[in-house]
Length: 213
Image 1 (tube, rainbow, N blue to C red):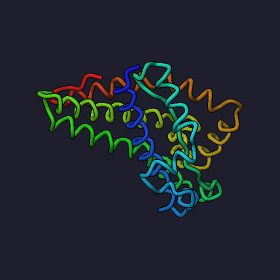
Image 2: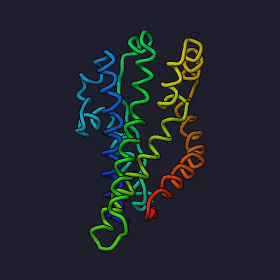
Image 3: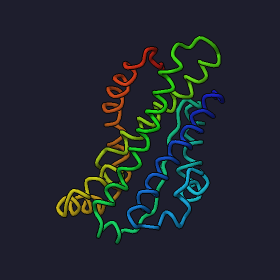
């Protein structure tokens, strides 16, 4: 077990998912739905998000780190919302869905800026900063791209439902299929590498000193 790497990955996961879910909760509140606000999730404090989904935020990430020797982790979280509100305000609900991936893009952009300004890894300090920023860059690109896949219950499907009544009916029908969450995870996991690596290679190519995961 690479404990240093494992701790970095878990902390990065916890921060990145908290930002993602807090963005959902904030835009729901701005759109008139106070459901997530009542659970305390309009916050960058990870505790309310962990309380909402302890398995996805703690148990599964730690288990995945243990299984793969601390090299990466996987997990999930959720932000509750009022489906009646979403039905009557599809555009606001779509914006709420988009807010999570957009927040991850913002975090990835900050990580990119840090890598840009730090530059060449000339000391242990700059190497440590590059490793932290690089991990944030990689994980937030993964979260943004994965969640943009338009399959329920991912955020991409929530955005598509806001396009109109016909799109909403189609995606609601898909949501009613048995085992749809598991099917989505398997399909999206196979699609993700084809999305992630071209984007990461392009973004990494803009850096004066590319990051090596």
